Structure formats: C-alpha cells, structure tokens
Image (cartoon, rainbow, N blue to C red; front, side, top):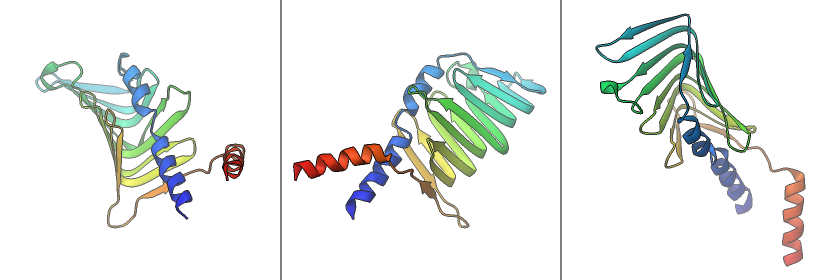
Length: 178
C-alpha cells in the first residue's frame, strides 16, 4: 500500500527537479520582448507591453496579452515581470531536453529572488505530469513548489505511471533479492 504513495511522491518531486538548472542558464541570456505597443514610465522604471506580447530569454518563452517589466531603482537583475492573459503561458526547455509548460491568468517572476508565482487557473506540466491550483508558487533556488486551492476548486496533481520496461526491471530485481 505504501509503494504507490512513495512512487507518487517521487514523481511529484521529479516533475520539477531540473527546473532550476535550466532557468539559471536561461537568466544569463538577454530578454527580448515583442508586442504591438509599449509604454515606458521613466519615473517608475516600468515598461508595459500590450497586444500579442512575446517574451523570450534563452529557452524561456512567455506569451501574454499584457506584460509589465518593473526594474526597481534601475537595478539590473532585480526585475519583476508580470504577465497577464486568458491564459498567459510560458514554456522552457530543461537541460535534459524536456519541456515544461505553465499557464495562468497572471504570472509573476521575480528575477533576483528566483521566485515564480502563477495565479488564477494555474497549471504546470512536464512530461504528462501536471499540477493545477488557484495559485502555484515555486522558489527556484530552494526547489520548493506549493500549489494552493480556493473555495471553489481543490488542488489537482496528475502523475504518469513509470514505463512498463522500467517497472518490470525493478520488479525482477526485487524478486531476485527475495
């Protein structure tokens, strides 16, 4: 009875295990933003991009209806990026070549704190494994993910089974040891 729970927990841990490695190399790349329009407020160091916004940074790609970049006191590396859409989406290629996909009505990424918050209809998926909730937060440097529900919907996690080839090898090894 405990074995499926252990496999489920291990699968949940593996879902995001390589995320920080790929993100750290991606954040060393320049940020490119394309949109139909932009508005710069020099007094607050805020740039608002609207209409079919596409942000790329290395393998990271964010699509949104509206994207706001805030650079407090003009400091590089301390940017906060907020993306809005129905939904706003992001994709990233992991170091192992796998894709991670996320979506929510609002994405907030704090570059200097390595903190990602997805809110309202949030979903994060990798290799068929998926977490859904009202709010998903991920502390990238600590590799800690928290998914939270609201009063109308519970957190949902979908873990794909391991392949039959891998599980049959594990089962035969265990039976040999007995």
